[in-house]
Length: 258
Image (cartoon, rainbow, N blue to C red; front, side, top):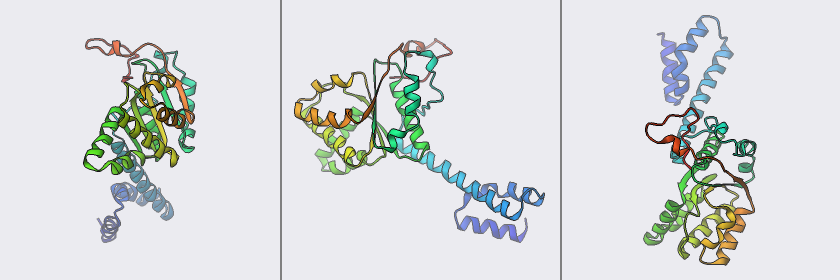
């Protein structure tokens, strides 16, 4: 190793350019062999650094998203359930709705892949640079309820309102209490105010959500904001769960739960 090489490595460390540092040896070999000119050498090193930063950034956002599983759209087997609206789902994968602050509602019976697809769309959003948060609706409501008890409600609401995309899983599972309905109203209203998108999965059709709210005025106001600015996808078909029992194997089985 020459003095120049050592000085270059020290400079890269000082500038925290570890992506360049990791590939420096390989790039120097290419340069010494005449495969890279001076400008090409610098350009390739810069590309290495950009790639490392993008990879690190995606990994950090994936960790913050708190997905239950790293589901992707590429691994979902549409052929296993031909009733699913594959064309509509692939259109949603373009994420135009995310750019315009619209939401997505995935609803249908248990086991058809709603949670998988919600996380897959979230995974795509992360790869496009968005901050995403996945959470069960019951857990989100419990978290907000805890904020009333310890006076951190505003902070907790902000944490759920902040991400570019919030995925609420298992929405409308049961009747809501008045405080839960109020908290949900504040969350949806805050996200609507800042044009932040949501993905909601539910076993019930949106029209069946209204009776779950104790106050019809709150229900109408909240659901009007949510439903009228959303892409609704009815998902139907056979459940994947029977194929996931211990001892069963199936070539079309996926890691799909809801």
